[in-house]
Image 1 (cartoon, one colour):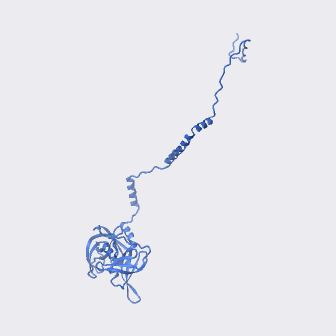
Image 2 (cartoon, rainbow, N blue to C red; image 1 turned 45 degrees about the vertical axis):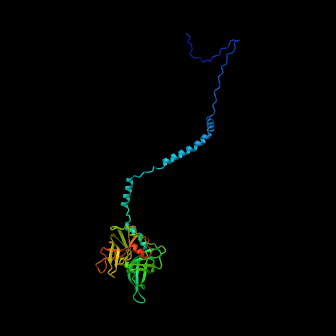
Image 3 (cartoon, rainbow, N blue to C red; image 1 turned 120 degrees about the vertical axis):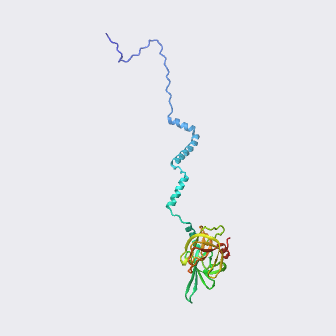
Length: 307
């Protein structure tokens, strides 16, 4: 029995159409649509939205830059009161701050001078009779000191030594025996002479801190601190029995040589001129009680009181 082949290896022959039969109708197959290349379409879109893109690009760039800045910039730390307290405590533990007395002394130092009273032992030799202190109150070289520092004899030669080492002769402009004050004028002064700042004693109270600056026993300039021990005190000078009134009493150490020096506050402002110490000893050593003439009286003696 002959098996029918499933697949034929021979090409199928197209059956011939019967003669005289019309040709089979031809079916029209549309050609596939040809699309424009992608970059052409993108270019056309860009062209259609050109103005919008020109406006959007700068905005986008700004947003990108701001985002980058925000990411790169460290976040600002907000300090709390606890952080501030810790920083202050660390500073106090690791740094030695200057004391109020030290700052007061530094402020008055350029205005403090050594006052030397010279006399002649013979025609050729000059001898130092005494050393005291003075304070410059006018930058032209006007200085306040004590009368007993410069003496009452106009023939006495007076020299002043300024803080920068400059030295000059001085003349007495005025003497006030009732207050043991003298106003002297230096004949030459440093170019950068700094006058002291004066402060009224109004508001000065017992217990306020003060510093006395001068040349005790010709050593200095030296500073000693203490407090105001009393106000409106009266003192009788053992030299000439002159009574001094309305004095400031203080306990900052003062000795011979401090006379005429400034008594200052913690701000470095002059409230008095040191004039005397109360001592039971003949040498005049300090036992804890000193007196100063209020600056209102001393400045008035110079004729230039700011009060």
